[in-house]
Length: 420
Figure (tube, helix red, strand yellow):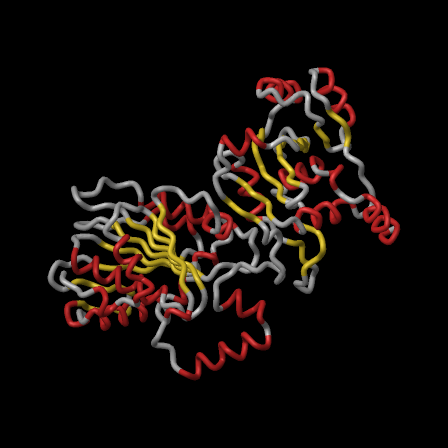
């Protein structure tokens, strides 16, 4: 099928269209409302239906929304490509058929993901899958059931599976969709595309006026709904994060080392961090980590000794004095952290107030993952609290302990008195 991409696809999606020629398995289109994500994917699904001997499966979380959403969107995609006369559009059951070849698009609701296991088509394999509004799936496990149901047949030579996901990023940074795609760690088989209404020149003036009204009245809502930013409670923790390579030459020059431990074992991972704190410029560098579940104190101490970090003072979570005594017995220069009312919030604020927190995802991947995904707790009315979520924050706690001596305890003491 010949199509002039630049004539029917928005300029902001040319890169996506070119990426579809590559061997990615997953194509993630995320962004704000009115950014033409669904339009572009519908064009691509129709294009492949005409161009290749494959079937496609289109899914939304709730099945009764299919006729008025993705089905109509695909009809529009066919019109934009100028191939609507080559297709048959069926309403009962929902199906779009390539008249010439006989391959087709089918539609399913994922109200019960287990029902997806029975999907099977004859003559042509299901090699294209579009899941619209991916954020409506409560867990990644629901998605995996669908993937396992489709990724089971050997495809003809020259044809590969392609899964298209479209969604507006959920507000909470801790949502599994954000944690999977708003990260430094994107698998090689996954292509990510972000878009906003600002790149869509075909929006009517009335829509643009309404968006502008939201921007003026509620900037946080505007950033989330129209710019596609997972803003959480409206305040972004750690907007001082810098993800980059920290070279060996830099590490050799670092001499203001800080170390910390957050205990864990069965369900919660143990976390050890080695940091460098540039006091003059107020920049914290993450140099190394030990992180994982079921790491005994003996194993943790052994790894610290192996890396030659035992002589530096390591400030540990003081909630486990027995663990501190045990690790001291293995030669680690360990001490307990000072704690008090308000110490958690104070430590988190101290980290947030630094000029930069420099994290090398290769050196400390778990710290990178936790710091970029953390969000503030919210109250029952959806307003942010002054404390971070108490989950997936092990390296954040470790960093607080490690830098305890650098915090101004006169201010901390005052804060404690005010909180008492």
